[in-house]
Image (cartoon, rainbow, N blue to C red; front, side, top):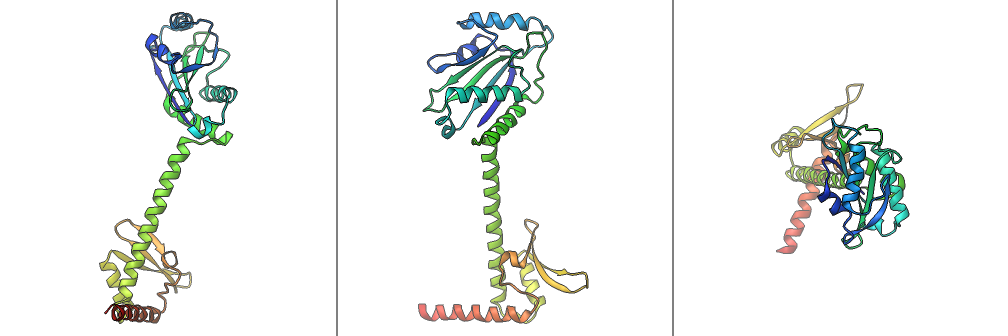
Length: 263
């Protein structure tokens, strides 16, 4: 679900767009009884003229559930969502003039346009400070509460998914460099460190409280990411360099066997 809001001067063009019956139908209204856009604008002006200081006296709001959610939401549900949305924006539904109109011209994707006076019936102007951000968070909060799809959550999930994919790629690259180093049958752990460093990976020892090496970590110089050896591959054990030599010999033998078979 997406929530949008902006303060604007309002006027006939915006109101005509919202109440266009070719686009949809009226959901509900508050403190209004006019039928035409002209009649409605005159009613809005009655309260708006109580406040001469405010310039943008109208809030143009949109509440748009996902297509999947609108298929299971009826008009009563949509009205409830709208009321919650307005309350989250500190709009008193009893003391403000507004009209909520459903647009459904886009393939069953119902979304709600709301033409709302910023000036309440006492002449007080509603703050429009960060109103756009507030609308986004209001929609997210309502969607989370009601078990609906939140656009903000979809964005977060996409970011996390991209991060996970990038992390897996980085770990894979480090492991491939490790395999390349041990296949060289190096004669010392220092030689292994040097080879890994030449490929952009610094191998750091992990020291315990007793001052003993209890493991190692890989630092990717390019990204400054730091991993335990077990996070790259559980079979990696650098404490005993013989392990590396043994793995290197096995890797070399495997490659040689494959070469002979292909030959």
